[in-house]
Image (cartoon, rainbow, N blue to C red; front, side, top):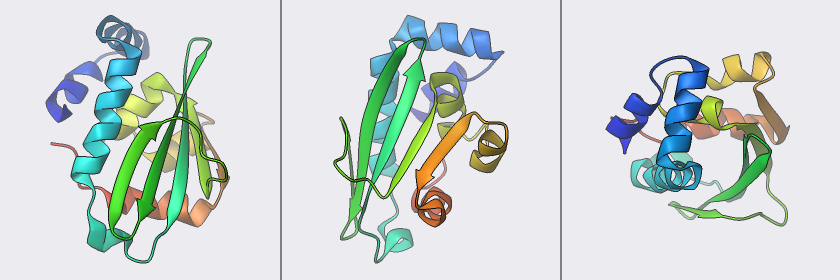
Length: 134
């Protein structure tokens, strides 16, 4: 999926959005979250026990995913967490670029394209939990 995501995120935001829609937003998100589990580096997340809520908006639809990091494991599934330690909200194009390594979290946050509620330190640290795509 890493190669596919790299190709999907080439071009303008409008072109990226069109490619994601052509592929299917749900399919793209499911593949990205599945890839997170594969790229997870347990040694980088030692001592972390947290649910991370992602809310990815696409037009007027919101796609909710929960990433659970616990006991050296990472699991991702669609849905909502009862009490996540951190909630991250963004649009599908920014999310795809972030996951492809073509956008940086702090940059998206500063421009208002990434909203973070809850544990900011965890939000910053979790970027190190995953091997880079590719």
